[in-house]
Length: 209
Image 1: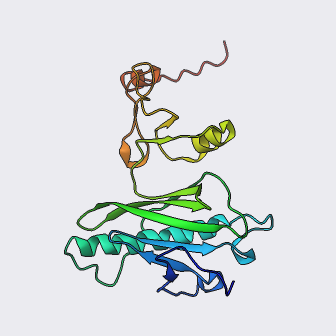
Image 2: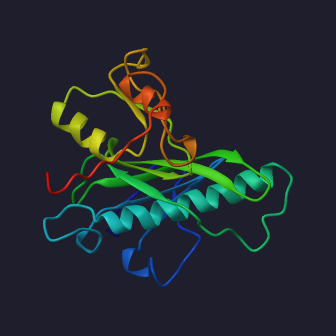
């Protein structure tokens, strides 16, 4: 590992904590609008099968998104104070990464509000998608492109969105339910599910006939 040269722009991560110390060396790259984190996967980063541990992915995604939100707040001319705390974090696992691969956490601040910053991140191993982290309370629609049918089903099961398009950006039609999850709304429009808001459920119990 001593001869390892990280990708251009990456240096030893400037933040240390008791949680991440066992995962060192970590690297980070400061960009204008975000901070990326990367590392070479080793035994201490993986489970018994040699695949990157989901807890490590979630923790480093949280770290990268939080630091990137601080950058966004500063770019907006506001003082981030002593830092931020995470109030919501979802992680969708799309694939796997193995020992020896370069794991990259690439965050993207989505919206900077008055007291809340929303962000998301793509986690990749050797440039292949491994997971997507979502520090937002929204979940209307998302899209993915893959030729692997098994991966498409895993995406459908893991992604926290009301509508998912696989290999298509045109997913809305009157025959299909339209609506999101989490803070992206309750109930559906369209499809047979769109009638549910206009129906009343009646429970009848008859005994002794």
